[in-house]
Length: 475
Image (cartoon, rainbow, N blue to C red; front, side):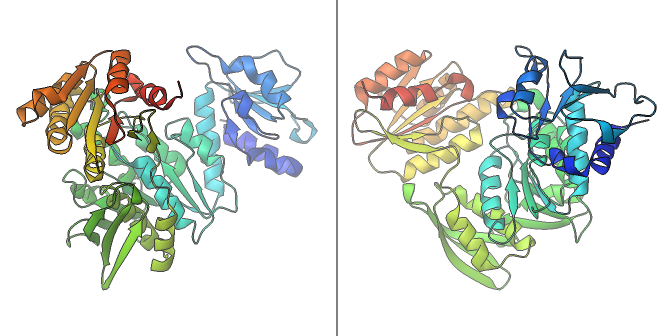
């Protein structure tokens, strides 16, 4: 049976001058196609990529993957049956090409696997419930001190995004740091079949996505697929969170060398004397074997020490010196999705509205605790928690009662946060509950002062980012 990889191999072998067409990035948006690139036409609920193949070729694209014929003046190779016309001479074909396949997403994955197999590099896979993106950024910054390193773009971490990232790799890269997303068991296994990671990093196991996965046990099972895919030691390295009781036992699921990080001496790499300095970053002491050193990094919030530990652990596993590791940590972005702005009334707004889970919201409240002035927590619903919905919101309410002088909530589920905060001692007059975003915004406009530090956090579906934008917008 003819495979897509066979065709790609034949095209590159018989037309060496065309080899670069399989090196540039692939794109699923015709506006992002680069000269010589690959366009993948994916039919969606609202937009069908097949309607934009012409636009992709006009941008300079050389190959388009299609799963239905398109009416264009381009050579179309029909791969649906697995048989090409007899006597076909690849050397006589002129681009652009359309490759007609049964399913374009599956074909994209096959191309990515084909390209990954041709490259000699080490892949670091990163997964977990919270902190994947910041960990990926920090690891890449550390590794880049010694190796040409590619990292996942944005949140391209699923069955489409990860192959697109792999097709950005070149023969010059020596390391790739790829974020791996998860909703249900089986997804990370599929991603690993494409990416073939040698190093696996598990951040933590929380309750986010439990609504889709079914339970925390299913999340553990799905995340552990990364460890099962790693090669045996010494080539394979599993970097695990020793402090997480759901992660620590995962060592039984891998043939790779296990490297623990954490906040106790039981871990291989651990930290103590952690000091949060608000927006100035954090300071802590690292311990590894006989080494001990103090480090200050521009990562925001005490919880960021775990991000630093993961990046340092990868650096140690990949042979970097302490000088290289520390330099990389100090060059890491302060926070990937958190930003700080001033409102029109002069209040300090800590914008962490990209998304929310109990674990990340608790970490954000810890950061709020480090701030000076009146502390106001503006917290919205946390979605996709499934059976852990009440428990997660109650934990956040408990912590908000300890940290904030004022609690403002948005959404139906966030009433649980407010009730929990009252239960744990927060005065009723300090709690304000809203279900309408505009009413919440009006209250904030009327009540924020220059002495306030305001944390805004909630699931993306609530669009609390619009509240931040409105508060800082000039009238």
